Length: 393
Image 1 (cartoon, rainbow, N blue to C red):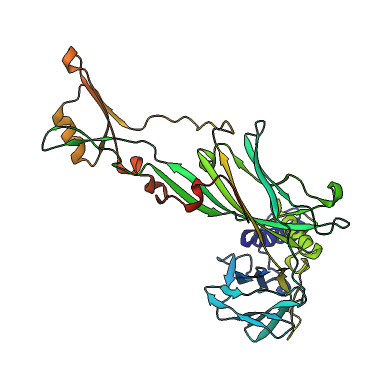
Image 2 (tube, rainbow, N blue to C red):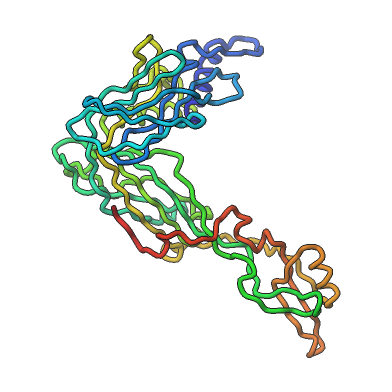
């Protein structure tokens, strides 16, 4: 979202610059209107029985070195119309609070006190969320991508349009460039077999940076089926071996859906001549102490549905791109040559000894960063869920 907000100011600068073009070219510096700078930006949603995180920041002028400035020292809490309150703890612009079980009959809102101003989101009752029935991956051979499709359960209200948002926590398997089951012993001056010298398999985690949203208006019975959330390029390491995603589904209001769609339109491809300025984006957060505008939309959910899925490279016919062998190969190698490579910090990978038949010794060598999967930023403790085939909550 921060990058998209930054794009809004670039668009605004282009609009002003284009309107001032004449027969000569001269250096032009556009000032962001005061109404569109130093705006409070709020990210996050109120969710029942979960740790809620709210990110507060402020928009900056176009010539600022920071895209968004974190808001420090604010007082943030989730409040209910029944007098309940959940206080948040702030760490570098992120405000985290443990929200208990929300009541469907109570209206909840976010309360913010910062820089002498008070802000609140519009009170709303928490919306229930249907379960996720299925998440699948489909290979699009034409685009060489894997589309990730989601199907929620039958909607609670099939007679009206339903809106959802999805986020996904990703985990994928990573392999080192090469493996070895031997090393060269300098004292004995010979090759020695030893398995598991370096961790070869590891895992990486990430959270998809974009909130995906969808509407049921174009589906039969208002039931979304196999909606594309995102895709993965087949040349991306995430899909080389085995990939898992934990999808978080949350029912949202039409107003929150419209906010997310407007934000995407404003930030995609640097917008256009009719792209709204940041202050024109819809919002349900208001300043109670002045007329300052706020960017953001705080939704409220009674529950969040989760679904874990797996994608297997073999089942999707994913081929790992071929690469040149970057190991060091030595022909007519001697044991002294091997000892020299060990002194250089290299490790033995291949040993082809044909000297007994009047041939030569051929060896291959690699560095630890080519053999240890941790050098790729992976961890080696297998996730608890990795042996599971699927899981729904």
